[in-house]
Length: 366
Ligand code: SAH
Ligand code: SF4
Image: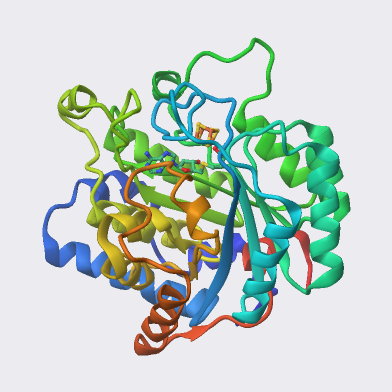
């Protein structure tokens, strides 16, 4: 793999015509779709290789001050039991990531002011001092000062999905914001300036999302030159406004289906548009369709998996969408299953931190 290749060269090299995004999203012929997924798989192999990077996910708090209309952690849900993990509990999960040979830990949470600047900075410093792991944060829309302090403490990456490129749809799925507050696009710009590896993404099939909207999202991934791209199916949570039954039946003519196939088509297009990015087969895809969903994602252009290391009693409460924990599920068994899946597919578990080649090309690192 030539790390010196710039993202633009790599893009033109795969011969994919970005003008055709919308047509591909409307494609219904199964054979043509399999052709697209295979094309993305080939580009993945040529551009980022056969490693599947494992990121240990720790869901450190389910407190959230936001009211995103699709999410089961939204502040407005009555009666939800809230938790915030202690530092020693988080560090035990971090050690588990090390023991399992992972190169990255992802600390994710609702937008929780209780995770204040100093606490998160201290945590990041300890992880960087005590391990060789890369640290990814996904803590919502935080201030420039918070993001700067965490980068200085050693955080490597930040995930913040822009959720949709359509201003109209954005308004439908998020309650009005305080005037003058920075939006997610502005924050993504800060993250880039601060030198983070920047990840963003959208849900596939959120009520009101048209194929034109999704095509716009994919074009924006390319324009933003993202280092990481997260794309997963929307999974309705019945206690949220967009998960309620009537939101589901009020479908548009051009509504994007929230299916595993559509999520994989969008993932394949993301790989073709952004060949050097790190792209996970997301937890939502696995939730919708179990191990076959992960496998289909890995065959459609994905090169990352994010196994969940959150202790099971907290994981049950991190209910962004329902059914994330299946009856009898523990922690170790899915990890072994994931490793066997990777090997059975002729791929290899990634070594080292698995930095994004898009980020290396952009910043001239390595
Ligand atoms: N609070 C942080 C991180 C946790 S939410 C943030 O919002 O960035 C992480 C992602 O979960 C969100 O960006 C959203 O795309 C996804 N998500 C939320 N509700 C979902 C649902 N019902 N189905 C599928 N994905 C969902
Ligand atoms: Fe909170 Fe993130 Fe869910 Fe929005 S998507 S309600 S910010 S946890």
